[in-house]
Amino acid sequence: MKKITTILILTVAFSIITSCSKSDEENIVDCFGDSILTELKHPVDETNPKKIDFSIEYFGSDRTLSNVKWTFGDGQTATGISVSHTYSAAGSYTVKAEVTTKKGNSSECTHDKTKTITVN
Figure 1: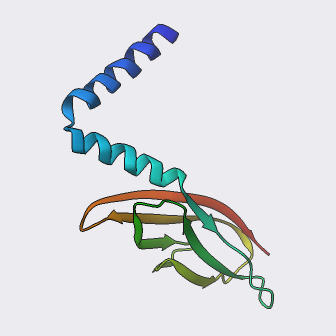
Figure 2: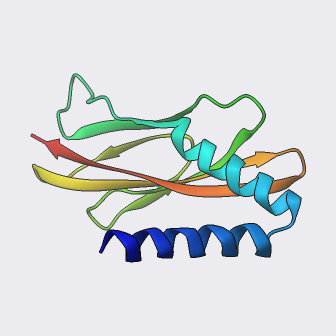
């Protein structure tokens, strides 16, 4: 089983390397790095435990946040780097932030940050 896995990994890596131009390879590395350099924050509002203030922090230096689309796990969505959302009921929700970063006037990267939260 380990041999098959190793062969598959090497095959995929070879395919990516041979099918991408240099700029494509750089973009793949940039986008992968963006997912590591992004953090989803979600402090609870002190006056209302069902209200969560969501935000994205990006720690990269050569790209900027261009868009964030939020899915709150209760059927509601919003856009923006920082948003507030009030849940109608206590429970466990999976929140997803679809984060888009941009380098200059081109080279966009989109990746998801997902977190399960508990609302009291």
